[in-house]
Image 1: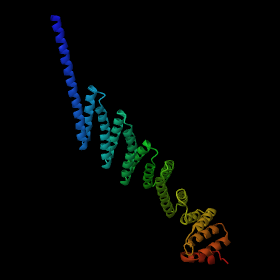
Image 2: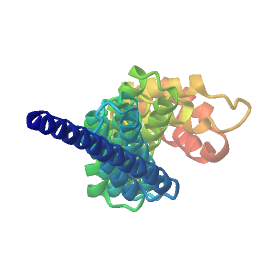
Image 3: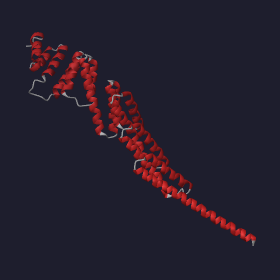
Image 4: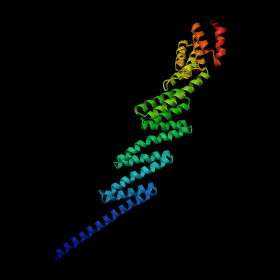
Amino acid sequence: MMKLNLFKKAALGMLLFTGLTATLNAQTVNDALAAFNKGIELSQTDKFDEAIASFTSAIDIFNQTEPENETKAKAQEQIVVVQYKKASGLLKEKKYDDCIAAFDKLVEYSTSFNNEKYLKRANSAIPKIHYAKGKDLYDTKQYDEALGSLNKSIELDPNYPMAYVRKAQVFEDKNDAESFKQVIDLAIEVSIQSNDLKSEETAKQIAGNFFLRSGADAFKAEKYSNAATYFNSVLEYKEGDTDIYYQLAAIYNKLSKWDEAITAANKSLELFKEQGTTKDARIYFELGNAYVGKADNAAACDAYKKANKGDYAAASKYQIEQVLKCQ
């Protein structure tokens, strides 16, 4: 009888212990649910870090009690969503360093919770944030810092053409023609590979304008070899027009490259579209100068006669009557 009573007491004790354990587990799950709900409330008021801490607490409790509880998975997803909102908000405020750190954390969370959607978003955003930071630094003429950010953007995403464009503009402002050309050519190459027509057009326009200015400056400074290089570079980025070939004709005459000057002058005349005006006089005058250099006086006389109008009338008349004594 005594053994039976002991058995009954033991069984009753086990039942009480099991019931107590179930009650404790139920309370702990309720605590996890409460932490989850608190996280939702906090996220709705943009208290992102506190919300993530609350969701993390919920996950920890579920791991100790009901690891397969579906709310645990929801908490994991909410951490990723809230971190993305935090990072996006920092981007709008242009707090680039904090924003990059926030997106790096998003990569960590997305990887940990196997969230491919937000992992892809983070990895796509980070190079563009480095680009945005670099662009702002360029705009404020902080060139070395801008190069650092733009190089990081290119390192993370070598297929984003505008990062190359902005990097080239840094070298443009630093008047580093060699580095500018190297980088702007990469910008165009990547644009073509990416089928990004807008970026390609932007890069070519920037390059053409840069070499036009550089060529004009070099000519003014009487650095004619540099001027020839720059004006020929223009032709790599835009269609040649009458003005570019006229400049080349004038430059080649300064360099005593008579054949090149004649070719450039004739190309300028071919592209000239303002017939009936005197604006082509300057082209014929350079053509005449080139023929003089080649000692082809007959061709020079013909060119000077066509240049004998407008602003070039006096100079052409002098060549015709006093220098060459044309018939």
